[in-house]
Image 1 (cartoon, rainbow, N blue to C red):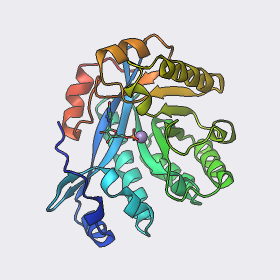
Image 2 (spheres, rainbow, N blue to C red; image 1 turned 60 degrees about the horizontal axis):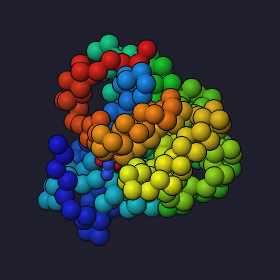
Image 3 (cartoon, rainbow, N blue to C red; image 1 turned 45 degrees about the vertical axis):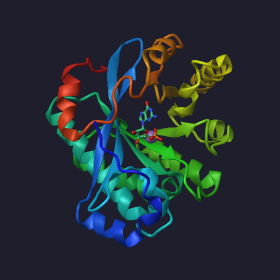
Image 4 (cartoon, helix red, strand yellow; image 1 turned 135 degrees about the vertical axis):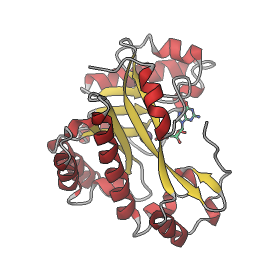
Length: 267
Ligand code: G
Ligand code: MN
């Protein structure tokens, strides 16, 4: 289990983050995704953590806004995608050839010219099929225009990388992104799961969003599945992927083999 420090957002500085990157204080944990109905493991999402020298392990909530508003953003993107490529190489060597790996990048980074060609080169040089990498686009403080975002997503998809809209339905993403940005996957924010037990209306909303995503040709991932009851319910709503503490909290790199050994992988 992870040990997470309390919210220290206001105490982190960009200098500390820059030093932390140079000193390798940042690392990743991995949260599995399950393909329901087949009951197979479809892949993992890598989640950034900061082993801060005095404050313990911090989650992105404590520092990501700071990084995204700074010139360090590009360095973090490079770090995140390089680590992901290396992880996919390691997985291939272990025979986990079908597992995908998702990374989180802010909308502002998706619009940066050259991202798609950088990823193509990174994956091609390592003989990794680009479709095994998925970019989860997160909302960013300054998302830029939807046109820039849409063209960044288009370039990524042309390079073969898979793209998801992250945390849909609870933040600022509007319905517009569903038809203006051609992503492969829609991830429903975990807040929906919190109240499906007490609020029948929220079940209706989740079912409708799953259908909407699927009719637009997207794979849908339901996040934040924490209880057996939630899992039982999401298992009834169609061909979706699901993620959450009920399946597994994020795990360390060293726990991946054990987790994989207990599951059947997707084909
Ligand atoms: O926005 P995104 O889904 O990328 O956020 C991932 C974060 O959510 C991780 O830091 C992870 O620890 C947390 N998380 C993952 N699964 C669950 C869950 O089932 N419940 C809650 N409350 N948090 C979760
Ligand atoms: Mn995510």
